[in-house]
Length: 535
Image (cartoon, rainbow, N blue to C red):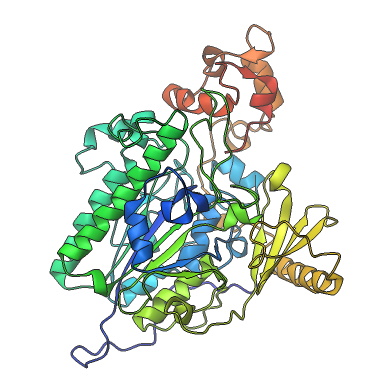
């Protein structure tokens, strides 16, 4: 297997205090969640107010050909922190329960022995922190390593991790309801994460140490929520758009708070700031009460959304600001940059070589960030192992220069696009360029053969879920069998009371129930329970 693990990373560099070498930059990486390319005012949205992101773009460069390396959260984030395609690490979809992870042929958490950007920077003298969404393990998974094992000096998170983001903040009383699917908590998660980040940056500055901070926002992941105060900028906008617009603007305010602190401390020119999103916008529901009713993100005209390997699912905002280094007010519509490039490019910006023996999938694109000539040498590969249908049909994809090949799970449907000239993917070039299609498909198959076939048992929980075969000696119930047992009155649907029957954690059950209720009618049909909707 191509990937090489490290129990300890060897960094071949020497720090020479006072040597006159260029000062190492600070890093602030802000990652939104399910925010579409078209959700920024500077990208043409006619209503959403994003003054701080617009300012960031005017003071930096807007890279409009950036793509994440998976159309959902966990694997997209794995690509950022490791510089490797997530499928090399067995991460194909989002981390969930142990049972779901096994069904998806995934570990229960990201291998902490993998090469990790925070660890490399930490060992090079950086103060490192992670605030906001974690999701490099599933929430509630026993034995999952905390963020400190991955190289972070401090962290406060939701969706896995260690210390909850509300702990030690003005929102501490919300800690018990601190679930991203709780309407009240969801409006304050990013604010609390930003509070932590501001405090950490102040502390690092006082220590005189460079810092690397991940600020991974909640917006605009389900549950999309907004307070009445959040909604004030949109008095004439009807729901569900008013809530969605307000949530985006609330996230924008957190970006503004971070930029204001950097300016206050005189750190703006010493800090490389990146803003992006983990994947395209969530699929919207039309009726009030449905799960994704308030998820009204826009792709800016791109085909596909979250879970799709079409551009709308992976081509997301990517803005870089580093005054004096990255050109201000520049829009780059051609340079292909991918999430796996963040790892080697941050190290290059800091003058730190990659770890000895590191075999990453990304490239050092610092020249492109600085506005200098750059030509990508490495291809980008994607694998989507989730459900297929509609715009989610592609299973495999590859980008080589300007062109992207997408292939379905049967390997028969193959489409080729020049995504620089045709970002909307409206003209399929496959019939015109069969040789290119054949060579790119062969490259995908070669890459596919390199992916791991087995799950490392050390990356799985040792605590089996309740009623698992390890505890009962019986095979687990199928969802059809579970439905039959829970349908106490045998009317072919489940009320909340029936769903909670023998549920080990009643409050957790109450939180989960709406996620199955796709049509929002307050009961679960057999289809909704047995084949639950996409998450």
